[in-house]
Length: 177
Image: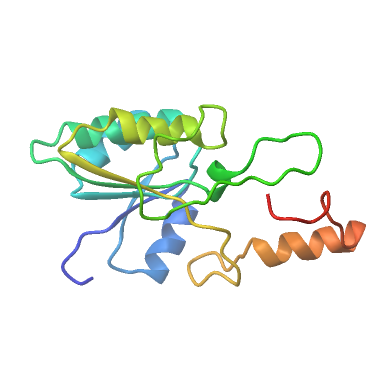
């Protein structure tokens, strides 16, 4: 958007240069998710934060919430988690999970603390004050080639690699769980 100032976190000057070449109007800052002070400062100065780097990095989640919380007017904090949060716990046998998931109903409180991604998601949900509007987004695996700076995909490559090594496989009876 031509009137927005978009800032991206880059791990190195090389990475920042790649971002600026592809997106000339972008502002880059050097650091990683362990640069807590930087994350706090940048999120405090942002109206909207979109966190997509590592949904399990609890310290980064805390830093982003802390920075946004210092804004008098609050802001919008979008945290991309992972769909594995709804994965079943491993169990013996071949039992089906009868739960029907709803992508509109508020499901955020129903996950046990042992589920994948839960610790950082909990920080976002429970530690964000009301003035920081927070959403945890859990997209499924996205297939295809990326269109951004890194032209990677995850799903197809993982499946292809697995099939090359072991061939097709089935877990249990193959029934949905």
